Length: 355
Picture 1 (cartoon, rainbow, N blue to C red):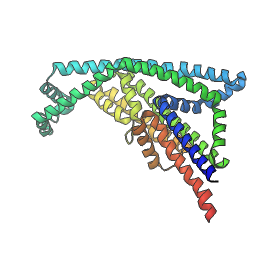
Picture 2 (picture 1 turned 90 degrees about the vertical axis):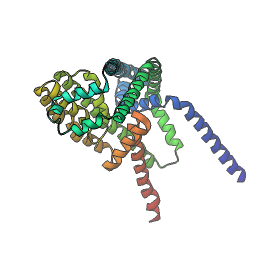
Picture 3 (picture 1 turned 180 degrees about the vertical axis):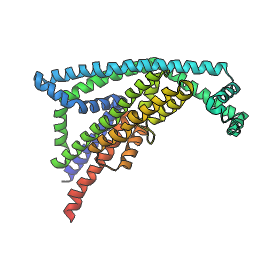
Picture 4 (picture 1 turned 120 degrees about the horizontal axis):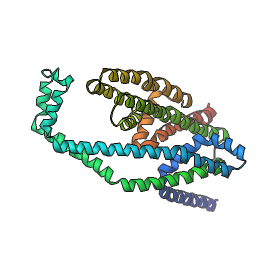
């Protein structure tokens, strides 16, 4: 008996060691692997339909990988290149502007704006404060840091492009094998996990529903908001419309204002710089179409897939985003919904047995 116990703990120690070593080796590829898992979960029903048609799981997985490459990766790459061009253009314009204008010139320009000029007496204390030497130094230092940061980011474009190409390769390889071998891997995991089939099925179902809810409720809604905002920005004639729509996409994940944190200031800017109808159009379009998705579409889709209080959903989404990056939009809700499911299993299996 003692020998069997020693063997068990030694074997467990070996398993923990090699699992830890494997995770450390996979850590550099964590982001593309997790994206492959997420996209694989979302598109698995399509893969199943193609598999029934071609009667080959390998061929179906290969076709799905080609479809994802052509209709997801290629369009995203093109948009990223166009967006990068606009970011470079904006950075160059900022550098040239601050190289050819002093801090006093900027203040004088601000005082000529219509909404400032009409209330010059009311905001004179603010202007006097901005003219102080210490404020000027803080602003200059902040601008220098911002421009240096943007310059460094642009300077690392070659490295970033090469890394992203490698990540795309890792993503496609992982995506292919998830579709082809996913059911077999899942069945093996189910055999290894010492849980009741009902409880394990509940956990896996929770993870699946959470991924779908986040994809359709958060990312899908934010993508639609970005597309509709791109249309509006282009109609009113805003420069760098693609850049502003990208900001709208990322702002859509940040409550409480969401996408309105971008389109509303642009509507105000349009009123003073472009014209009245442009501002009115952008304001009405933003309220009725862009931001209505935040209030109607997103909560409806997410609540159908995720059964948790809104405040928990809020902290899990924002916390995951801040801690893990963009993939944290999935990890945060998955962690919390799985925890909620484990609580239910505990109540049913442990507490229920005692009562």
